[in-house]
Length: 141
Length: 404
Image 1: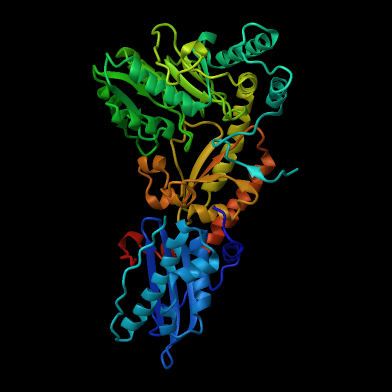
Image 2 (image 1 turned 180 degrees about the vertical axis):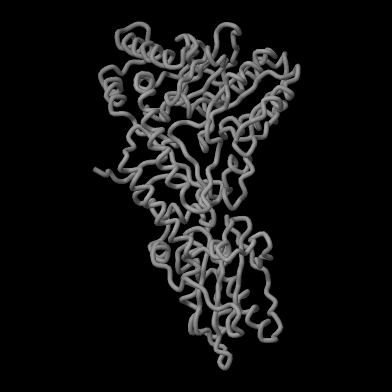
């Protein structure tokens, strides 16, 4: 699988690998998988409750090089953004930035779903209703 | 001296032995004749070279020269054998028995024949990749014309008990075909001792050139009939028309001769290296061997590294080490290995599998280097694997409800 330099760089030097304290009310955890592909991504975000800003983001991912790169890139992008801003991130932005081949689009969907899951986890922990999302399915020609 | 990059994908293909290339070269330029040109020295020289190669090939597998048909490779040989038998034995029956872990050249040809009216039984394998011989025998019916079972599996290196299988097929008067692409030249294969009736093999798996292979077709007790699948000039006793690939055939012959003379020593050496590699990898936590341990080719090991995905594992060292993976992400079909799945290996372990295929030019230093590189990458990826963290925390992964 020929990958772009950016994917290889994220693979060699992944950003924001690790864990946040899952028990804290300010931490949201999204654990998502793509059962057909075997990829699993866990994204954790730490929120400033006063501003809704994501102050920290960490990931751990089981998956191919594209899944690891998409995870790493996602943590970089959402740090410092508000939750609302983070939700605007579209999986195709990841595809474009990393120049992912069509068969790897599902890896970017995984990252987008992880953001949603992490934010919803935070909302539930803090007595807010979970947001409903349209299901996004990876497709390729 | 460590030579990089390290090539450990010798089940996919092998490099040509320089002695093979040397033998081939004159047949491109000076001795370029068409082996079917019967009326001038150019043709005679080519024919002579083909005859000699046929002897070299036949000798390696214990066959008669007249029983060897040259093809473009094992895929063509498999197609010719299956389709040719189906056509020739139509009056006897239409039933073929094969195994779910066969190479696609056999499986897909059988599926094609199903559309033409064949009834095909695909035997299942156990967790070691082996078939139940009682099940094989029970599957044979009066309509059965052929049993097709590979000599050794390309993904796991598991060797099938061909002699026990042929005892069954002989007892029932059914033809036995074997795709021996991975076995010929690596371990002793003898069509008479093994009682094989039809056998396909390939040059490029045994340090010969690509684009050339052979089909062994038994001529007596029983005399096997295979209907030609390509019409034309009636080459190869009418079984396989097409101008002979003389340089390729010369290369295949030379490759067979080298294997015959050096196979025993080579197998001993590779067993030591393979065992060293395998032992070191299995010492890591949560690493599993795929395939029957005591019944494998000497140069192959297939191992799953749990909680690490195969493609990302390859990325950790594929600039310097070439191996292949059963992960979906590395296959053209985007499916995990059907061989491992048929063995009941779970998706998690199938995605995490690597196949190491050692070869004639693999060195001890390269194995040491590989052990270190795989260890380092597995450890690094486990550090970023959420599944590894959960495993270490004692969380049962099957208890998790996944968000998608």
